[in-house]
Length: 249
Image (cartoon, rainbow, N blue to C red; front, side, top):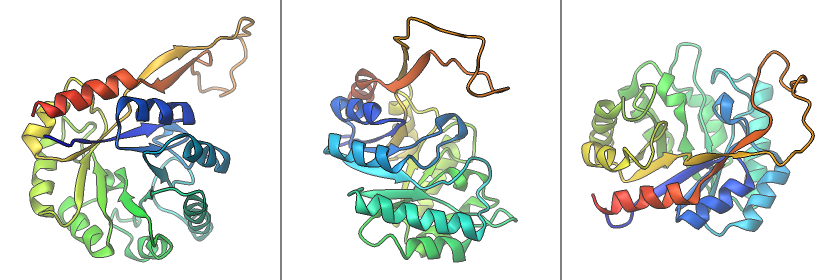
């Protein structure tokens, strides 16, 4: 694979910078990574755009949980799409489902109407859609540029059979981008098996807080316990290793 396309799921401007340093083609900027990714702040969008020259996509997801959105949430998503466009983002990432697990044609079409000039990715809401084959045809009809998917499994390596079938079904009408669990150790095998041309990965490593004084008896997340004295940041070396692995395919 001569020109592999790596998209890095970046949780901060720092991660965006490291992704660029590692040779990534594009970043998807997200907040709330433990929740599957939510829309970053306007300030984070601007700061990221000012600090990188590679492609910048913004996830448009107002909350964690399911992908069934009410009218107020759709309005918020429209404003966030417009904000992403205003700061010079290259693309947006979103997805709406019906209560029955179908692609919500009406709501996705409404959001798409505000995406002129932006690349559009339907995110892993696809992985919890009822019928992947039908869903794919509907996303093509809606005009999405790509689908981020793990092949409706927990990770992309586990869903490689479905990914291969989706790529065959897509027949170059839409890009199938494997994501979730993709890393430098498995990306080459996944590429060989599925024939995918674009890949989505986090490539993060843990960094430790520089706080000297620490009160570890207080949790900012209440009952949700996380390590508040470490942070996961994109590792440029892991991105480089992934690209090198793909170049040997």
